[in-house]
Image (cartoon, rainbow, N blue to C red; front, side):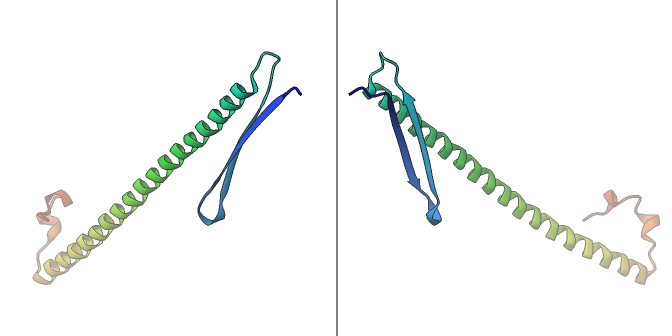
Length: 113
């Protein structure tokens, strides 16, 4: 019997019943060894899984970085809202005391807080 093709596939189960299958088939030439071809196809399938796992890790890392940046942005936005409320309170107080802030402060850069 002459073997003309070798096939190797691998199934990996993920979370939530998500399965991934990667497979490959090699068509043998006359001089090819089925054992060597199978080893080469198996190596390719395993390398492909490794490459996809690395991509998944990179995606998870990027997602973590994005979530972290979003949380930092929320903190800064909260701080900005507090600063704006304080500034409005200072303006109201100065008006109540009869102080003209526009004549005293050239720009917001001159505000000491």
